[in-house]
Each structure stands twice: as C-alpha cells, then as structure tokens.
Length: 120
Image 1 (spheres, rainbow, N blue to C red):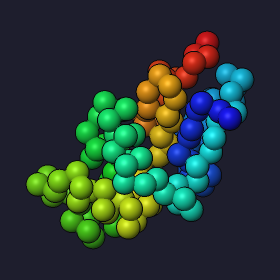
Image 2 (image 1 turned 45 degrees about the horizontal axis):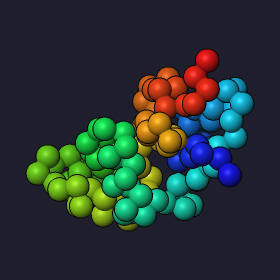
Image 3 (image 1 turned 30 degrees about the vertical axis):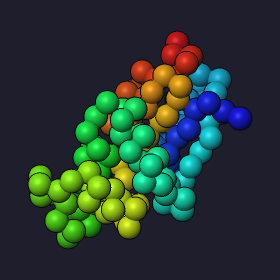
C-alpha cells in the first residue's frame, strides 16, 4: 500500500496536476475522492497539524457555501470549521497530499513536492 495519500477531486485541474506530479516520480498514491469519502474529524485535525498551517487553510474560500455559512468569521473555532467541512465537503481545499514527510495543500501545486520522497 502506498505511503502517499492524495485527497483528490478529479474535476479540479490543480488536483489532477498534483496527481500527475506524484505519478511522474514513480509513486502511485492512495487516492481519496474526498467529496465521496470525506476525511473524519480526527483526520482533518491530523492533516492540518501535519501541514503546519492553521486549520483555516484547509477551507476553500471560493465556494459560495463559505460566505453562506458565515465561515469568514475569524472568531470561529477549529471545531466549528471542522463541523462545516464535514457537513459540506466541497469546502475542503484541494488537493491535499499526505506522506511520511508531512502534508501539503497543493496551492500552489508545487508545494506537494516538499513532501514527496522522490522529489527529483
């Protein structure tokens, strides 16, 4: 089983590009289509921690649901943000690549190279 996981949306060109970059380095990742199989609360917390970024970085701000749900409120806690991500998985920013070297949000897509074992 692969040690690389990509939280992927096949309709997203950035996500497709990240998957291609992983495969170009001779790796076949475990692909999680997060719209069909969203990560759990604990997985989201672990991913955010592994990125070294605030959990808010995992929230896709370009979705209409972002403003509709008031997620632009800076007073929201991480648990409130996670509740929104679990209820509306389209709000999960993508792609997210997780490896033994850490996790990166592929925005920009080249960021995923930082955690790939075969970077060259």
